[in-house]
Image (cartoon, rainbow, N blue to C red; front, side):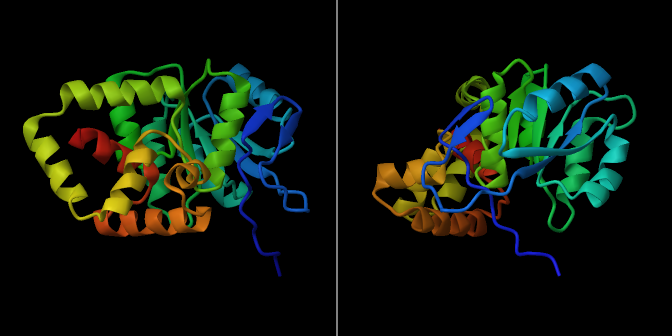
Length: 244
């Protein structure tokens, strides 16, 4: 019988080789199991070496193409997959879409050197938990992994600014109207939570701003998903940004 899985707690700050949790629990947190998917062997090795510097992360495997992802997930049971976009057999966004259809699918963080508008849009559409650039600082990548595993996906600030720019400058009136109609289903408190999700805040941060407990924020997030027929925070953020 396997032990009950305990969700990892995302740290407030991460530095290589050392982390400190915001609310110590009295027991060591289990490392987040990570699968790396990238067609460049040097990138795979570099990411693995970088992530091994963080006690909160355990790299359980690495593969070179989207066609290998399903089998690797079955074998390694990762909680988070770091997914490259451009690969020769199956691209990372297609692999992400296939993976997210699975029951108990791991979270997927798209990690790439490309940050074009279309890549950002597609990453959100296929259910990625976040979109990271390979030149982001290692601590930011590690923090994103921990937050995704804890159910609080994120974009790095540079990508979030780009997404907000896309929504502000490119949303057509019908798109904005549909988004606003969808958000009209939410109560004022739910709408406040959704707005802060779109700003990239974690549940604990949202609770601090709205004077709610973290469990209360989590309950609101669950209700928002149900009312809007969405599956993750990235999709909520996109909808809020389209409505602006």
